Image (cartoon, rainbow, N blue to C red; front, side, top):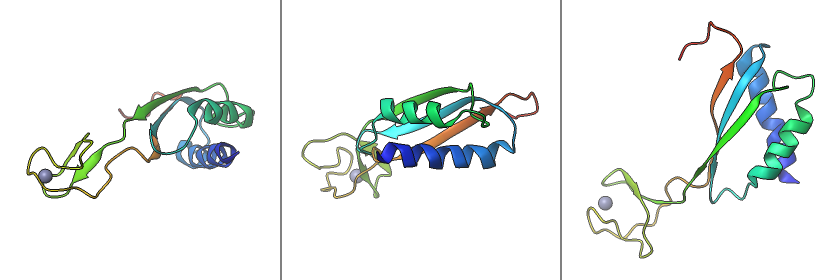
Length: 114
Ligand SMILES: [Zn+2]
């Protein structure tokens, strides 16, 4: 059920960001390791969006692959042995892959900047 509370949070953010304008499209980024089920998140979003700024909006999401990150080289990469392919250090940091983010909100209004 935690997708329902996430959906509520997202709707809340959309409400503030859209300044009461209607949303045309919502773009999300969902990390592979975020333990969020995109299907159930979308299901709840559609369910709670009635009569809100999100009603009728297209909701798209991008799955972000899990990866490791090297501070030294400032790169993200995939590796099974936790070794940075650029500098050879052993990496103990996760890079992207755990996020659930709103990438962008497109409003039904020609005044929004691209
Ligand atoms: Zn490195």
